[in-house]
Length: 179
Image 1 (cartoon, rainbow, N blue to C red):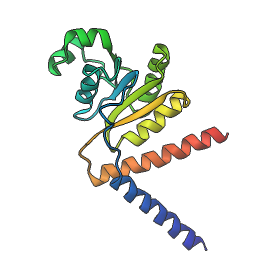
Image 2: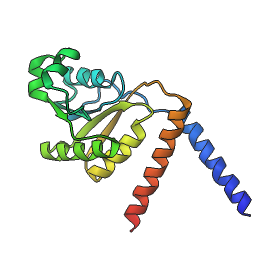
Image 3: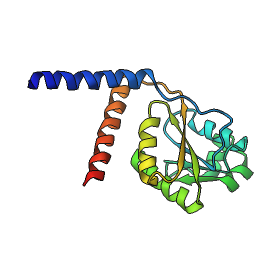
């Protein structure tokens, strides 16, 4: 009986991993508008995607979460070809976040401070599910979150780790709610 239960658990975990890998989130439609866009740093293409959304007017303001503490705004503008007027009026830099959980907490503070009702979350396709889980938890389900996945390069080991992080965090959040 125990063997069957272990085998069934492994089979369900494995099928979940396959589904996680095959059905990665996609980029959001270009026509979707939100109050704000949040970009989680860490992989190529994320910042550029957020800037494109802001420049098109699909969001009013952008938070870049997880910026290294040593980065200066002017350096960022030059390195990433950000128009100064746009940078100064509409882009906020979060230098306090160091991981997905702190990204979500800092983003929630920022969203609440600006009284936004909708936010587009930009991160890598393989990271989006966990980032949305964390942000939704931090916001208490009070804000509409639109996931916008940037296709990323991913090894099997990274995929395995991310899937397990997602499962572990979902269980931890669920157990935390029950107590």
